[in-house]
Each structure stands twice: as C-alpha cells, then as structure tokens.
Image (cartoon, rainbow, N blue to C red):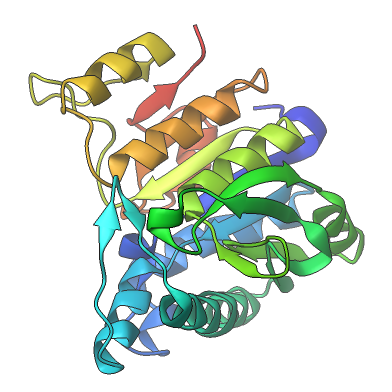
Length: 266
C-alpha cells in the first residue's frame, strides 16, 4: 500500500503491551508489534509510535495511595496524578519502548508531546483536573526524528499554559495522524468495534459511530478510540482498529490482510 509521504501513525495501547517486568517488554506480543515497526522503518517508511500506559499509571497510583477515577474513559488527573502520569509515561513506559525497539535493531527517539511543542493544549474540563484538550499539533519534532534516522516514540503529554497536561493517548494519536494526513493504526486488545449484534464491524462511519455511542454499544475506553479514528479520517485518509495480539498484525493490516474495523468519514 502506498501511503502519503510513507508516514503511518501506530497507536499501541497500554493494555496491549503493559509488561510485568522490563524483560517481559521484550518478549511475546510486544515484540511482534515493534518488530513490524522496525521492519517498516527499514523499508523506508516513516512510522510514529504513540503509546499509552494507563495500567502502569494506575499501578503506581495504588502504590502511592492515590485513587484512580475515570469519566467517559478519561482519567481524572489532580496535581499528584499528573506527577505520576508524567513520570510513568515520559519516563518508564516511553524508555522501555525505546529500549525494546533498539533491542530489535531499530533506532528510536523517545519524546513526549511537550517536547518541541509537539502537542499544545488547554484544560479540557476543570472537573477532570490536568487533562488536556489538544489545541494544536506541530509535527516538526517528528520530522527532526525522521531526519536523524529515528523512529519517534511519543508519550501522550502536552504543554498547557504554564503546566504539563495529561493527554488521552488515543486522542493524541488521532490528532497527530490528522496533522500529518496519515493513516492511523490502533493496536488494541480487542478485534475491533463490536456492533449491537455482537459482531465485529468491518467498516464504521461517523454517523454509525455517533449512533453506537449514543446507544451505549460503544462505551468507556472505546469512545476516545473511535473519536480519535474519526479525527484521523478527517485528514482524507482512514483509521483502523485491530487486535495487536495477532502476529505481525501491523504489516498484515497495511497489506489488507487483517480483519478489524476500518473507520472512514463517509
């Protein structure tokens, strides 16, 4: 498949790759996804990896005696929660992914959305605390990483007015894909979007998505994923939600051989 400027945005979900130890990050399910990223980069493509890390944040909050609360799939983030999110996302998870890509023969550069003004935002809702709503995306840091021969690995944080912001990783991936005019591949722990009959939808339009969200068929953490896919599709391309646990799912999806849900505008 020929892609615009050979760019693709890959969102790796925290529930897909969260390891129990650093060693586990270099085995099994995680390896196949990152293997594909390294292989595509070697072939001249320019991938962007955007990652989550929600389970790790929750685990560290529990260790520190902090509670985890969610609204519409978004983590309520007070000052203490923001400090944990920054440490876990831009630190632990981001650098483990950089290490894993390097171990597979790739060359990766770990970034957060705050670095180089990649993602700028504002407080989404005071009730959610330091959760950011994205105002703009400047892809310049990504271009610089590619020029250095690196795969940019992006932690979902943003710059607010005088503060860092916790950005939903799905939302960040969608806005980055929109800014780049590039396809978005969501690697999740589910086979795709499930309709009201319990079947995987091969194709999902904006109108269908709104109906399924309103009816509650699409709920919780799947809501920001679908909304992010619709944003990416506004750039004139598409987004696809696939099961990241399948071997070499990324390459198979790009070749049109992977069942999942393709999200389109019309």
